[in-house]
Length: 546
Image (cartoon, rainbow, N blue to C red; front, side, top):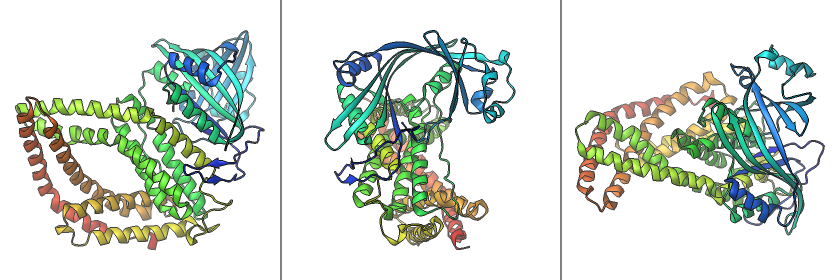
């Protein structure tokens, strides 16, 4: 999913309607929107014939590109991709500046030049800055990494529908493969590019395509997938990066950057969740969604009530769709494995392990199904459009509350929010040593929101001021998180034992008692440490007051 400034074309962003049917006026921001969908070749051929280019002949042509780099991948490490495209008898050399991860992007820079054959010629580059970025690379160092070979069909068509106005879309169907020494990988994808009109039309087209035949959002570029095939790489997991602000950043600017930062974090883990080889991907996507929900609350004064409700509801639903997978991952890796390692002869634990392994497999498949669903694709596209179009504005301006008046600085807003959230957490933790589990759970959630808020605003105050507070907060939150993990595990195990109608019921009950007893004893031992962590947190200086 890519939104970017178009070259020499003005895109009209008007008449967009929210989920609740309220018109969103144009903001004067022009952008180009692209959506890449993948699926089986059979499914996409069906889509093309029945929903995209129904009843029309489209021209097909073969496109081949070879991606080159040095043996040590210097170009890739410098954020550059070098390809030679062949279209018939013509060859074009292209260098593209790319990011490492999918993100909401303002566009990519590309430099192209015709050449005489399939071998690249860096001497033809006229851009001095690009030559400096490439560095010293001689022709003999370049070698082919992988080849992309597709049959491409393209169509330009207009959509004239109620509430969308005249819209022009470019649709491209590519069917083919990547080839390299490591093997081959199929390429089958449809790319929809909004050239003119309202983004709402593109969302409707995408939804209609999914109804005709299942397809899914493809977050990785063809280049990323080709390198992964050639190098044997699996999709990587990405942790959150912190947004950067200055003391002059306005509240609205800050909100845009924070929400875009959360969306980038979310999309960077999409491929890892689908791949399933690293369970941390599910965790990081859930963190991204929770950070997004926290950001919506922090900046709720900017948002119309219906937009706030829509965004929190959809993000919460998506988080829930990943919840089972995360709960079983934590239980298996962090709670069950230590007990099995200490009690290797306990057969009931091995039976529990087999049952939990199957529950994990089913939960991970449900997580993948969540990301392949029409609702996920629709929310992702709608959110991207809403963010790029500043959909929170009404009548061409943000909410007129005191917290979001034009020009108000982020640092003033940050101080108020941090003070309020810190006060709320301290109030919940009064009498910490005797707090019941329910209150501890509420305190843990409050501290989590406080941590996200502190991290969002950290660049306004500097590391020296924020580090002691954040370290104390993270330590306390981690300890309380262990309390929550044990409580969730007990619920999961009780349900697991209650639902087993086979011959393993007795063994599962025994294993249940062993695991819960083990970690209940561990909780009793770490309670004094948690109390010390609470004291350390309450003594940490509120850096926003310094």
